[in-house]
Length: 551
Image (cartoon, rainbow, N blue to C red; front, top):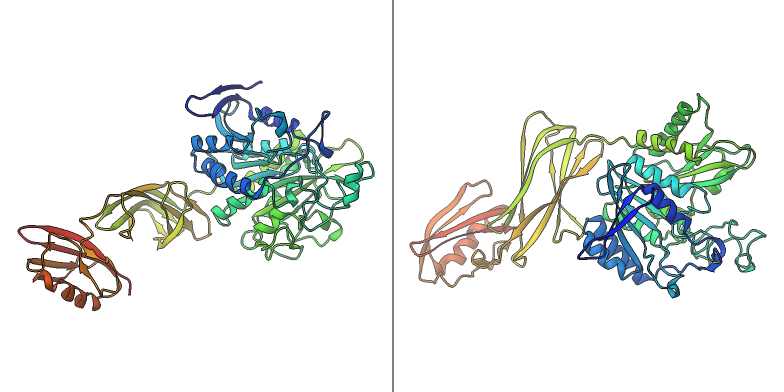
C-alpha cells in the first residue's frame, strides 16, 4: 500500500497514511550504499559537525521527545531534516518520523545522511529503544528492527543513514574490522587497513545515531534498554545467535540479567514455532567459548557509553556491565538454505522473546490524583494513591520549563502496601527571584524491585510577586531580616503570629514595626530548620507570607 502525504497548515509537518513497514523499507532502499556507490550517483557520507549534533539533539530530538512537534518540525528544516506524522492504517497508530529532507538540492547530496529516527508517543514498553546500526550490511536487520519496534510497542526506533562502508575515512575509534577492506574493495578502503569507518555508526562517536543514544541515556539515567540487532555470516559450527552486553566476558550485569532472560526466551520462541527444534545460542558473560569474542560488541561506542565508559571512542570497554545495552548477533548460514533469526518469517520470534523479557509490569501504585498550587511562597504538591503494592518511594522532580531537563527535588517514602486511599504532600519553597512563570513537576514512582514509572506532568503557575514578599530575605538562618513593605511604618502597631509547618501557633503578640526585626530574628533563632508561616494584621492591613529557615 502506498502512503499519502498531506501538508498541515501553519508549519511544515506533513501527515502521511499508510503502512509503516512499507515506508521504512522504501527509506532503507534509498540509503547510500557501500563505497559511495548509489546507483551511479556517488554519495559520500559526511558526518554532522559538533554544532549540528548539539542543535539536532537539543532543538529537534528533545522537542519530539517532549511532544513539541511544531517546534521540532520547524527546527528540523534548518538542519536538513523533516518531521513526518505517520498514521499506520494497519495498526491504527500514529508515529513520528525524523528523516532526511527529500527536497534538498543536489549539491547537498553528501549531507544529512544521519539516520532514520521513529518515535512512538504511546508505547507499551516505554523503556525500549530498538536499533539497527547496519541496515544494509547486516541484511534485513533494518526491516526486522522496525517489525520488532512496532510489535513490541517500544518507544524509539533508530536506523543508520548509510551503509557502514560508505566512506573510507576511519572513525578514529579503537578496534579493528576487515569488513570494509576485502580484496574487492576500492584501493582507498584497502589503504586505510582494518579499521572502523566514519559511516559505521556503531563505532563512531561523531554520528547522530550515537549522539541521540547518549541523549536518551542522559535524559533518564539508566532507564532505557537499547536493543541492537546485528547479523553475521554463520559457519557450520558457529552459534545461531550471540548475545552480549558489550563488555568483557567475565562481567556480570548489575541487577536483573535481562540478556540471559532474553536468550532463554529466544530459544523458547524458536522451539515453539519450529516444532521443538533447538537454537544454538551463546551469551557473552556466561559462556566460556571465546572463539566469538569479536562479536561481543566490546568495541561498540554505544555499549561502552551505556556501561559507564568515560572515553567510548577509545576505551576498550565500559567500567561495568549495567545490563541496559543488549547486542544481538544473528547468524545467517553461509552454506545451504537454512532458516535463521533474520529471516522475515522469523521476525516474530525475536518480537515475542523481547515481549516476554520486558513484560510491562503494572504500576506499584494506582495514582488517583496529582496536583499542585502556589500559596505563600510555596508550591504545594499533593498526590493521592488508590492502592499500593510494593511501593518503595516517590521521587519528586521539577523543571522550570516543559521541555527542560527535570531535576530531582526530594524523596518521599511510600506507604508500601495499602488497599485504601493514601494522601501525600510536599512543599517546595519558591525563591523570590522566580516570579510570573510556570514550574513543572512530576513523580517518579518506584517499587521495591526498582521498577519505576513517571506520572503525568503538573504545572504550577507562580504569579507576579511583590506584596507577599514583605520580609527580606524570606529564607536563611533567621538573621538580618528586614521589612520589605512601604505600607508598614516603624510606628505602626500590628499583630504578629508565627505558625509552624503543621499549623501550631508558636508566637502571637502585638508589636511595633520598628521592633519586628529584633523580635522575629530572636524567635527564629530558637526554632529548628523548616518552614514557618507569618501573619501580620492591623485595622489598616493584613499580610501573610512564609519563611524557610535553612540553618
